[in-house]
Amino acid sequence: MRREFTFIDQTLKYALRQGRIDITEFMRLKRRVPIMDRMVFDLPLDLLQRTVGRVQVELQDVRLGIAPDVGQVRLAASLGCPRIKIKLKRETAPRLMESVLEVARECDLQVSLHGINIGRSTLMEIEFFQKIVSDYAVAHLIIDDSESRLDPLSTHWTLRERRGLFPAELELEYCGRNQLGLAAGNALGAVKSGVRRLVVSCGGVGGFPAWEEVAMGIKHLLQLPLAIPADLAVRCRGLLEAIGVEVAVNKPIIGPGIFAHESGIHVDGIFKRSELYEPYAPEDVGLTRQIVIGKHSGKAALQAKLEELDLVWLAPDLPRILEKVRQLAVAQKAPVIDAQLRQLVKEVTLL
Image (cartoon, rainbow, N blue to C red; front, top):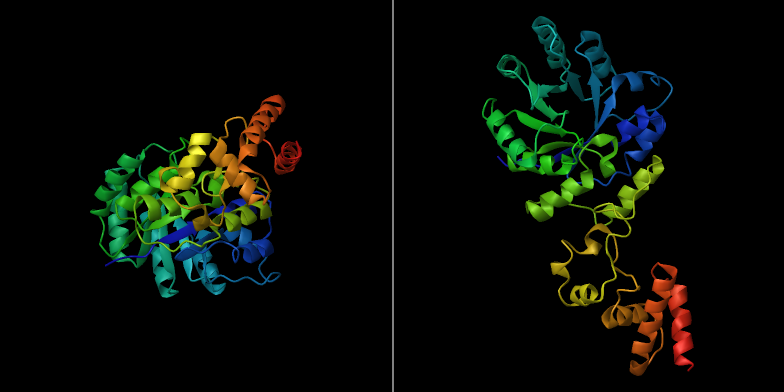
């Protein structure tokens, strides 16, 4: 059976924990998240409890994180949340866990269990989870690499092995971290193993796999079907700005300068075969290609920029304009901005 991708967002939970937003803003901002297939928003129960009765909350697309506690299960159900995530620790008593899951089943809650560390889980722990998911209505088993012990290849093979230890109807969920800069790659390794539930955050905030990188990797590297909004970059940047996170100019996928080109041969190639230089069209994520004019620019780049700015010039003027551009870029140790280029064109064409 083909399963759709589900992304579990940590962006807003991170902002809430950091005090960057309150629960009201959490509810408002989750409507601005660029939805790709299915989306679930993790929200700790303790942060929600502080506002119960004071703020109108919509929990249809929220998963409440709770402790293995019968009271918390009942509270989550009373709030109208359809799904819960139970964080287990090594010392959690099996009988307590069984009673918690029994109450969750009575309340008709969708349960995700979080307790297996992919890097150091023991056979005893795995056997415990095998029994639990078989005896109770557990929907998802979260396998994490919170210590960033694995690389994409070992993530792939380890998850394939873990998959064979559990019932086919149980969905595995991968939760990686970015301590070694491999979070997005590890998430794609999990996808290659068959995992379709991924914990992510916009821009990689909080140290989780960057949502936009994972999504574009699924579509363009793994070539799996995934609906991605045409304004992905703009919407991601807007969300990050709303929670006070600055987006670097060269941030993969969403950075405003990632499609800026200056080198002469490079720009000439862009216009002839853009797919050799760009993994996808800038329009796919709501960005535009930018031609930067500087000391490395050639005639092709300059001509394209002049046409973009609707400037009037003659063919014999082009070499002289290019020479002035290079001289100015070297002198100021920076690219030539549009206003400066207009002035240079004016000076040359008036000669």
